[in-house]
Image 1 (cartoon, rainbow, N blue to C red):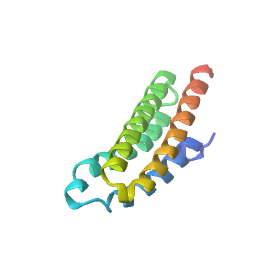
Image 2 (cartoon, one colour):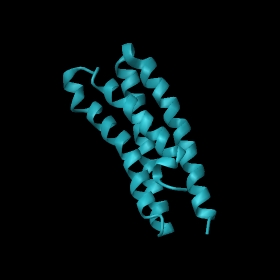
Image 3 (cartoon, rainbow, N blue to C red):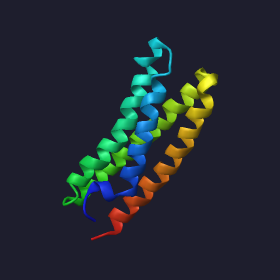
Image 4 (cartoon, one colour):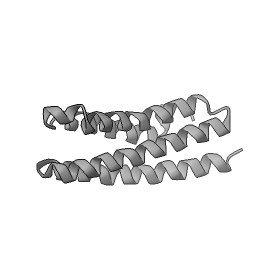
Length: 120
């Protein structure tokens, strides 16, 4: 493994972040600074924690801790998407599609955590 950019969970989380960000800018102005902002930050946190954990991979427990943070931010992102899909029906199909993709990412992060836990 050369760099964190070689991790599937990094690549997928980055792609999703780049889909989430412009979508939140379609929200009403007052929501840009409420749920929109929270969604942007939690989506960014998934990617950032994967990168930071990778930087600490020499210390397996730290690596796992940051992967767990990434998974928790992924769950938070799913929750924000669910709320926004309900509140803004005209955008719900896009939010629900992203929610499904984040569900898949969550499974991949969880599997990667198990892999790191088993590795020496």
